Length: 163
View 1 (cartoon, one colour):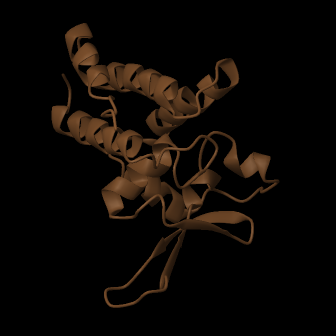
View 2: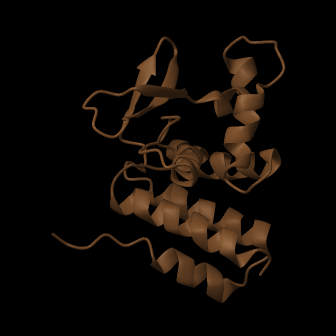
């Protein structure tokens, strides 16, 4: 496997998102890429809001009860047609590229990951994101040139404990 540390870190972030229910289709702060960016930067996908027309992570400073830092989801301007969907013609923002690069993947790979997660929503009812995550694991195994056994092992981690 190529870059197993990145693979396992990414799977860990996505497993936590699934178990903690911070994974949401069509929510830029909490989709597959949103969770990878949040997990790599110390953001909480549950602490988010739409400010103007852009979703943003809200960060609280220690000792404060209100959000004191707002981090917009600039990554949506960069790939998967984000700029075109929003009628923007400017070049992708440096901040958006940096957000995507914080995942450890390049822009093309993050687009593959995001498409795998979001496109399943149109094919089947995927409210908890499980089916999308199974497709994301397939993409990550391809990116990292993993084996079928590694894929099965990774997919087996996405289990919620019965309450």
